Amino acid sequence: MDWLIPDGRLAEHALVAVVALAVTALTVLIHYEGMHALVRRSSKRVVMRGQDRRTMLKIIFSLLVLHVVEIWCFGLAFWGLSAIPGTGYMHGEHSTDTLFDAIYLSATTYTTVGFGDVSPVGAIRFISGLESLVGLILITWSASFTYLEMSRLWSDPDA
Image 1 (spheres, helix red, strand yellow):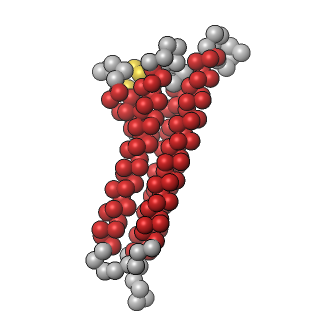
Image 2 (tube, one colour):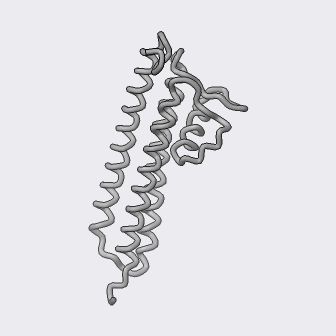
Image 3 (cartoon, one colour):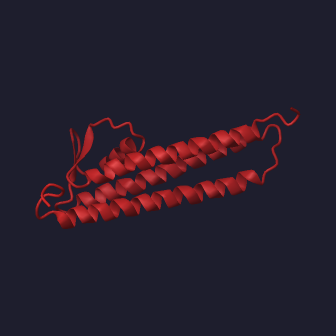
């Protein structure tokens, strides 16, 4: 099985895979529940002139908070796994494997910016690939929701 996972490293890679899938499930669940709460709150409101700005700002800031929480979930996974021997570490010019480095790596990965100044090494690379996909999906989900709410709030009722 050396072609897939280095000999003697199955346990570490399996642990990273389980953590990656768990944090993915957690972030999707957080996003779903957060979006569901936003839909319940915003869809019950009657659209009145002058309140659409406040409603949209609440939606945008709520979505930003959701994404920051999700970035932290992945960052905590990077940080926690980097403390376990054999699972990998974060490498960079100023990287010292701090929680801040893990959150920064998570933010650049989640948003698919990927500056490359901090990068994962070892089995934890799997989390980066999965986080990029999850971030892309959740950000576009938020964008779609924002568009629908803007269409509803900014439509001309007299038209």
